[in-house]
Length: 195
Image 1 (tube, rainbow, N blue to C red):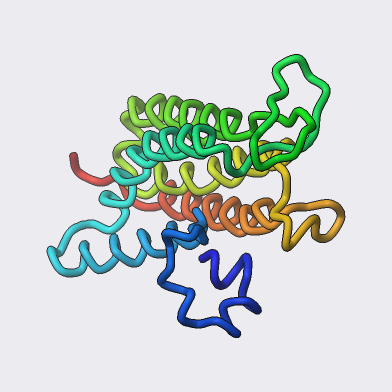
Image 2: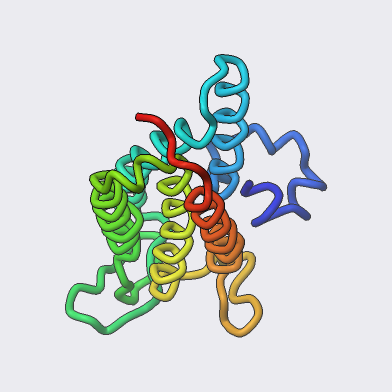
């Protein structure tokens, strides 16, 4: 995902750098595509319900996102835009100005808030009876939460701001929101699944 969405020119000219993940270059949106393909292959292999497995994975994903964003904070990477708020922090690689601890904002929004939304919906019998709804809510919810957090996060230095001041993270979140809404609509219209 990072190769395709964030730095394709560099990796086109340096293809041997693609597997060098220890130098960075990981991206959520690419990971999501990889996980979606793995879920599809797994469910086909074992004759499982794709929507049901996708729901289960989606409900667990915010936990990993929470800890991943906390790790970003500890590593001092993916820091926020310059700020004058009282909780602004100086990050070693972010220059001398205080910045938003946007990694923590993302941990709360993409991790904690999204987990609580999915947990609350999972407790609703009508939602559990229609596999796919939780996966759709995860997709759309992550897109919305990421778009909000990106308002405080510094854009990638080699990309900067895109159309109308959007970041690449926001641009990539728009299809997630649209696809998530479509999945929710599709799952809600399906017959009730037996539990």
